[in-house]
Picture 1 (spheres, helix red, strand yellow):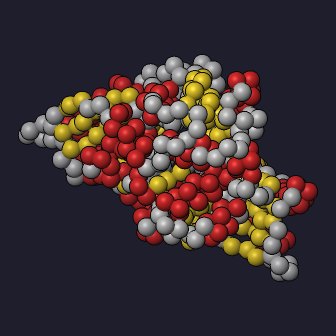
Picture 2 (cartoon, rainbow, N blue to C red):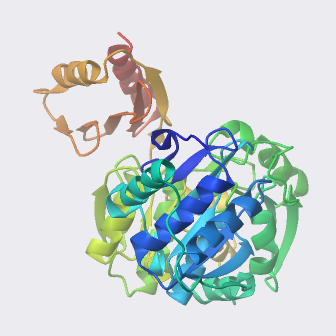
Length: 454
């Protein structure tokens, strides 16, 4: 096919509409390129429940095998299950998923052995260059000796590994509603939760890549509504929602109120620090709540602030030897999980924290939710640089106000802060604001929006 790879090869993965932007023939070339760039003798591949996933995955596997690479196919899996396989088998891996995107999309998340990320600066640009060359000149010649294709089941081993990382032996019985959004959580949750003192109320566990009930993107509040209603209706202790490839988890309390990912980050950070003797580095991106670094310091840890984006978190995890990292988008990264992100492990930490004390989840997380946040607000602008410069001009020189440029522009004062970041792909500025109280947050939010939208 004729393909514009600039439209589908993103900063961290491959993603586009099937078959309009890419198809199985292109997947085969990506498999061959992945084999060449990693230089691996063997790789592991898995896929989500989208209708196009099995065919794309098999084409990728054949493309790699034709270059002499042995391919282990693990079939249906969550993205963190693929990371488990990459780490446990010490093989590069490829996961076919478009995460929370609509049904017509699909993509590839790739990693090196040990679940080390493959992004633009760590191999993805080279993979794109090879595929573009082969689209012009023809597919590469097959190896003299092709690789093999074999099947392996990893779900039980993945679940068992996660259960070694969280002590759930003493938790009290809990009732939990889980909304899988017809995504891969419906595949992994029953096995991971098996044998725990949990009454599981499943929602949308049927694997269906057309997403008949709602988009599998819990970051959008509209997709949490069903779960928020069901939890109090069931008298459940909490609710958990997973995105399409189940690498992110979102939590709601017994009232159906969302628990912010920053509060989950702080809660898990405190638990991981306790597990590591009260010492360790915790990574958080710059738009997580100020609660996170406060809690980390209170529990003996060292907080490290990074840019937004999983490639930055993973790189800093590796560089600093951090034990845990969290993002506002509900990605949670664990040293003991090859520095990779796993929503399931974060969910198990929440269950363990709730189940080893008597109070409700709302009371437990209150200590990790100390500020009022705006959430992310997007504004379309004609000139991103000009609007950022206008914000800088409005705030620099003010008493008690600091500015930094780690990722966009962050303006901070003792009892509030806001960050404005430009989108890399659209003419947008993204605003996140936080303050000690609602009135201050609204004031700062509206001041910043007035400048952005002037």
